[in-house]
Amino acid sequence: MIELDDFSYAYPTGSRPALRSLRLAVPAGQLCGVVGPSGAGKSTFAHALAGFIPHALGGETAGRVVVGGRTVADTPLPDLVRDVGLVLQNPFNQISGVKFTVREELAFGLENLGVPQEEMVRRVDAVLAELRIEGLADRSPYQLSGGQQQLVALGSVLVMRPSVLVLDEPTSQLDPVGSGQVFDAVRALHRAGVTIVLVEHKLERLAEIADRVLVLRHGEVALDGPPATVLADPRLADWGVAGTRYTAAARLARERGLWPEDRDLPVTLDAAVAGFRAVTGGVESR
Image (cartoon, rainbow, N blue to C red; front, side, top):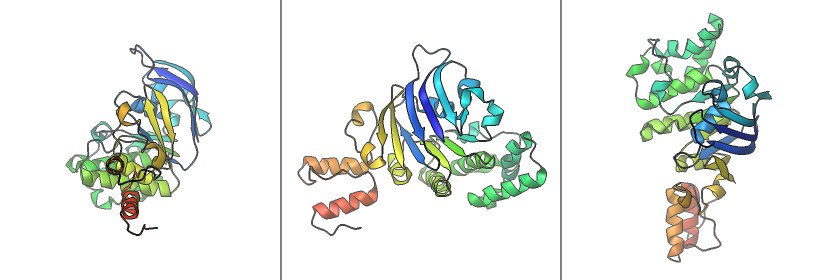
């Protein structure tokens, strides 16, 4: 579904590449998490997948980004938005500002594509139900909580029916309740078979839903693998990535002789509970 073939990118005013020789593939239906320190190239990576690089941001590229069989650099941005949806960190940057209700906001992109009205109504109603925000349909987008606004921003992308969804730290400005709403929606989309690339710094949440995690460092892929392996890697701290609190607790227990060296460190709550039960003489849950 997504393929990066020796892809590099430098911003027009950049002194060095923001992404360097990326080679990777994300198969259809996978939820791929992306983590890394500030300046690692995470947002640049997201923009490259969605076509904003090179079409909107310019700069110099090398190699290829292919999404759904189409080379991004050779495909006009209006065509790409039908296949690849990008959700930004701040929903204020994604809400149009020209619509008075959530229902109208969700229909805005479809209007620009000339989708027939009956089809627009069906799609908007379906997205409202999918995200469980029917009760917000007639409210102003600017009278919602941060979490609700991010769900509206997500809905405005989903209504376009993209085959690939790219989320660039969608919960970075949200409280725990708002974050939970967004993660629940992402989990449901993953179960429905949508291909998802999720840039996220809340690793406890990411560990629970991702099939795979990439660690970006200096614009390169430093690690790539299952969450249980990548998020427990001891090098993360040296690279400016805080691991999960469950990994930290188990690592501290290991330093004090309470967690066996040959036992993997947990990255999720369930794995931590099972591990501590086992090492303290309890019965490990299955």
